[in-house]
Amino acid sequence: MRTAQDDARAAAPAAVRNDEPGRGARDAKATSDRHTRVTVLVALAANLVIAVAKAVGGVLAGSPALLSEAAHSVADSLNEVFLLAALRRSRRPADTRHPFGYGKERFFWSLLAAVGIFVMGGCFSFFQGAEALSQGTDETFSGYVAGLIVLGVALVAEGVSLLRALHQVRRQGGGLRALSDPALRTVVAEDGTAVLGVTLAIAGMALHMVTGQVAWEASASLAIGVLLVYVAYRLGRDARDQLIGEAADPELSGRICALLRAQPEIDSVEALFTMKMGLDSTLVAARIDLVPGLDSERVEEVAVRIKRSLATTFPEADQIFLDVTDRPSDEAAESPAATGERGGA
Image (cartoon, rainbow, N blue to C red; front, side, top):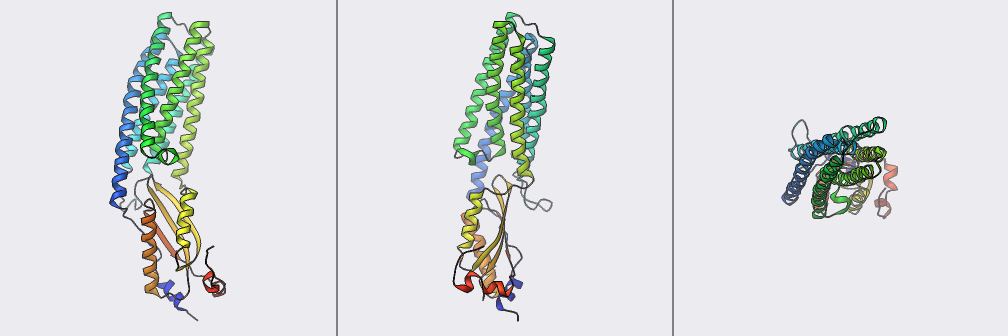
């Protein structure tokens, strides 16, 4: 025998969606993007100047560590161009070809940046270190001095860029939440790696000058290569996870599930699926079972109200789908609503 609940489920929409975040959320995102863009531009300017200085100094001094650092700065400069493209393209509005928007553009360009760090920075550093160990290098005292001056200036410039990036992290709340922006995370990783890499290059060149052993400078070049490969791997792994459909963090998923279970019309939450669609965009799809006895109009009203409640409580959840499930009558008889209990599966 067909019940009123069955009629309600048949008439209920298969999914409910919220496409328009609030104006306040959009303004906050735009402001955050402007600040991040300034951070990326500062890093780009610093890396371009430093790359030229390191390359000229490396050629004049014949320093493998300095040439490795020049390759590092060239890679970082190209990566900043990728990140600027990510910031611009990821905010394009949704269209018929991409109904969920272009938020994942940030993850794609961040992946390219990671590949650039690996290929242009890490591999070239390994090559310079291996070549120096096998063939040796001849450096003059003036070459050492010029190289150390260039590296000192580079250390100051990279430090300023890193401080700007860390300031941006603090401006956005600090911690892992601020670093969820792949563009900002990449700049922080690049600048932090650059400061450490320049420090290694200075140590290697100074030890080479004091001892006359090129192995010190070659080892510094190899260490820079290892550092760059590791950073590229971590950045690439994060971008890959986000591109293939990473779920929202467990804390957010738990809060969404708790809000759904707290609704008096929901008998149980059968399943909850989330996926990051961009920096501030999360898809939420929930399979829910309603209490018995709701007519079709009531089901539609409940679905709209729950959707609005989710969108208000969680502004990042801008794609919301609710699926009302059909449960066998024997299972419905044992449900929390039928037995007078509350909760959810």
